[in-house]
Length: 354
Image (cartoon, rainbow, N blue to C red; front, top):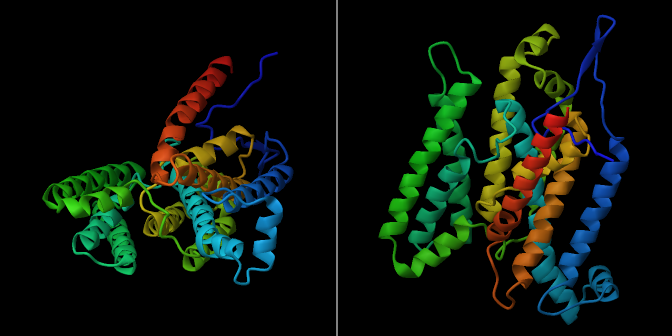
């Protein structure tokens, strides 16, 4: 029996009935899927807390969480693994949510959170801090400053005489990203050999120095709440600007909101963990392939799934060549490239069958 999978570029399946707009979702019920993804996230967190150079059983992990005390297991879980696992989940959620919003904004299913140069700006100032021998706080502060600067620069330059549109925004972001890339190459070329390793490690995504992500989690919750508030408008915008405008959506304001909100989410993710690819691209696609098209449910499911993916990827990064560690961005790229090609081929096959 042939199983039909909808094309990955389908952002929504909407119809109009009897003169009023109703969203008709050709999809599996989203609530059971979200419950399943939440359970999967908990399982991934338990796995991340249990696996490492010192293996802990489920009972030992649970005991260490409930009664941290001064025990060895408690220190391992609370001081080493929990900060890293929670940071991985938050960063994965930030990237997934940013990816959903960026894909709606640009109406491009290949858009990822970094397509407009946010990660490039963050990398330049983070690498500058590393070159100067600054500590972790200044590296993170530099990354956030660079990401915000890049966000504002793209937004300002994308304004033409008649305002800004999606194509102009995309082209401006690509050019700015290329410019940041040239600066990064120059910095790597002139840096001391003792600094280059740390700079490359940061650029490939690193969670080894992560702490409990309080402010990252706060940004994720804030961004998710704002996005959910405009979820219905996102569904309409996915149909096209003209239809959204005819149904009362202020498209200009909504696009500006999506741009800044998506950029804020990705800037926060880069600040915490450096540049980690594919999570913001793959998580929304995989959720859409499960039949979720309503952006309110798509956002929730993508955050859960993106966080779970990065927790599992970071667990692999810690354990594959233990006691050495891989940058988590290397693992996401190694797993993401073949997975994305598989999804793309299935999506094209589904489109052909249709």
